[in-house]
Length: 446
Image (tube, rainbow, N blue to C red):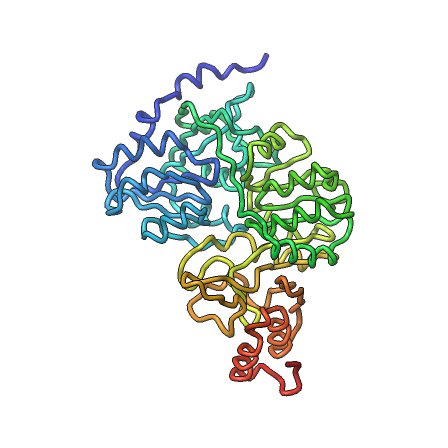
């Protein structure tokens, strides 16, 4: 006879206001990631502002509003932090109301296990199943290690979360939960990336020539990786796989086009692997109870030694700028935090070590500044920008003017190649800057 967990459920059930009473001044609280944000608990905790001091909250890729941040600009009561900025968290950071925590995603679990304090974990979960398990759903990539480290675990049941099958750490048993909160939630808003434009599509079409059947893909966040996914869906490629930290609607399009079947992966054969999912309601419906999908913690998804086991692994990410030495800034503009380190470096290393693997970093060659002036994203040398991927690890770089490969290239070869994919308007200026830095051969092309 199966054990009935209803009595234990009722014993642990609390209102949001009752549950947040466990928070003390000085505590570290974790909201986990993306759609795992505990909406009702956040609202309830914010109402305790005047009786709490120096409560520190961590989140990751969370949309607003985050009430604990917005209710206390003084930061005497609540201090909010993020591992990776959503567009909303970026705005908080610009206002000095959010602090960034640098991290490569493969180390997420280790940070919590060895170095971080979690007094209270607050995480949204799918409704409990008959065996007493709550599913971490689209939040599987980070939730398990956080809850294991926490002194107190509060789960907020969200009726809209899909139940996602996993490799491990995709759920938590009621016996490991201290309090359960129920609330009525609004459906998740569709998370849509920036609309792809002609430059995005041109870059995507340049990359497609490098790709082959039976490849497994990681697509990063943003309009460029999304454009590549759209072009692949319309291509003649077939028998593709998914192994990605972020599962977006680009993968749903690959599945709907008949390209994505995961049949030729060396590991997790027949299953598309992801850590965190963010997208449309249609995406969440696709993930729900889908035995062709497996969610894993980021310590598995992003581990280079795991990624390297997958033949023909292709990593496609975007960046903000490149310099003539081949360094890549993908998370900041100057000192302004835009996103996060995320998994770009993890997948650069892993895909480069894969048999037949390729790692692409893409960007548009220019941007227009606030004064309406055209600026080059290929710059002579970074000065204050935060480096996401070091020059020693960079593989393919792409703009709308071409694709280059920097592996094993000398400083002058790098400068020559990078200038060749810069906007033509800036090439002569970049050559002069390369000459100043002694990384331009006199015999090089002009």
